[in-house]
Image (cartoon, rainbow, N blue to C red):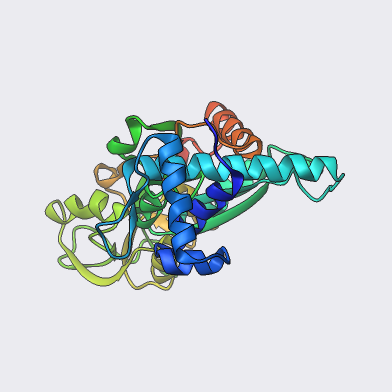
Length: 305
């Protein structure tokens, strides 16, 4: 198989902008020459990588998988040149991570804690809503995805690690006596709800059939709902790992009805194709985090049971 490195860079440019003319301009060649190089790459691989029937063009299923491979190969070349040139700012490979908002901070810190300052891989972390993060992996726009349970991503061509579990706890602020501001025995309890189309929204939608709730605020962001709850505007279902300090300080309290707790699991996902060395090191770090399970706390102590 004869594949030129410039073809890989051409393909990555096209995968980014989804337009032959723009990609050719980025690569500083004419569009006809650029198109020929993409065709040559497809012929060398033996598969169509670009769906030209759409506007803008899209990656085929093979193209999405190959995007990860192409980026890995380019990164490995950069890494090798960096070593030869004795460059020492990193190993030459940036690990691109797409993450659900609520997982990004804690998991990024845990990943970095697995390495010393001298050998820590460079991370590029994009925090976004869960569905957008899943799309980023499926489109080959990231090396690793940090998100929640997704049956589709547990099948080939993907690989996954179950990193940990969490409880979505119904919480609210307290009054001057340290008692919950709200109780589920009330009618129309003000509900600080996740956007219904979000992952968390889908997980908590069933609670409205068990208690009387009145949505008063919607957001897909955990931190936004936490702030609203701390300000006394209603009840929110929040992941335990995001409210540890607030529960310890007593600024938030778990509501008494523990049957309303919803359990979730969170995962790391990737394509099965091999990543560049830094990407594989991050994947190994995630395996260690999963084995140690540092984010899985004693649920009874958090829920006050």
